[in-house]
Length: 431
Ligand SMILES: *Cc1c(COP(=O)(O)O)cnc(C)c1O
Image 1 (cartoon, rainbow, N blue to C red):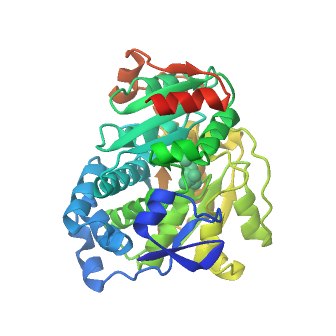
Image 2: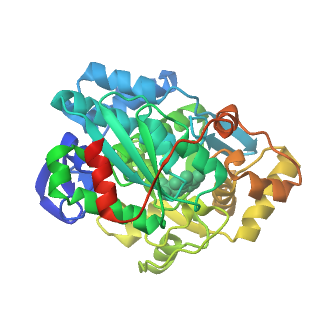
């Protein structure tokens, strides 16, 4: 499979080049030149296949010869080693629990897959890779954890001192091994600027094999299609149409679902569920795409005003608004509605939604016709990750999974640095 940039379809890149570069040189997003249609035989066997096997069968079309079959099998087995169950909530309404990975968020799937692809390429090139990640706190832990203990890869996380929550900081600073946390005396923007400057610095590039691990990497997107196949299989047999509601911010998760549909998975439609950061629902209703500054909400991983994967959605539908609207409906909900749904589902069903899943649930309920359809909303984080918000709504304490609990007791290890580039550069060169 070859890839092009969403800004220029003439130049071709291999999977390996696309993964190592992350972003195309023209700042476009990498996109496969064609979406493979999977074989009938694959769909006939789908209900019998394990999650890693599904991952392998899907991934091999996109990876091609860049990673050997046996390595790719190993990668999917390692990455997808936690359950992703469909759980029934109420009549016709199910949730796909994507939060059983090491950091309790769906981003584990993409981050772990990308990390192992990069590791495979580092081995091929026999040169250690240094990953620089700037984080505002939330996604850094999934990325760093994805690389934990991965051979041939060193990770440097930059986070703004005093600007991440206690639990986030513990997650970032207690991993050890090949992960180093730099606590930057500045803002998230300062962290990002340091990383950007490093990528453009000749001395550093001569000395180190620098790579980014940002959310737009194609190796984070592709694995987010695997679990739609697995969810669909878990719903069988059904004579109803299958609908997915996806709580969305940068729309990588939803784009994974759109890819699965184009590969032939019989998904009838999607619901793009958002909080007040609703540029995509607005685009679906008006045909106009108007990025905005983001607004803070209780489903804060979806506080995105200019979703990075919108370009890929446009690519999938050749910018045809009518075609997009056939497959995707938009919905958005306020914090108050999100809180009410958390309370309602808990009171009626004793199921605890996190704020993001709650938005997904609301989107599904808005459109689902249970006579002819069966629905799945994606639960993208464990409710304990948003403990304060959820406990305030439910008036009860919720259980924190062992992984999150564990890191609270560990010793924090970080290196404090200033926000000027020279200090950061000397640190990298001394490493
Ligand atoms: C990142 C994230 C989202 C949004 O996913 P996108 O792929 O950016 O749309 C939703 N929920 C949680 C918990 C997240 O971390």
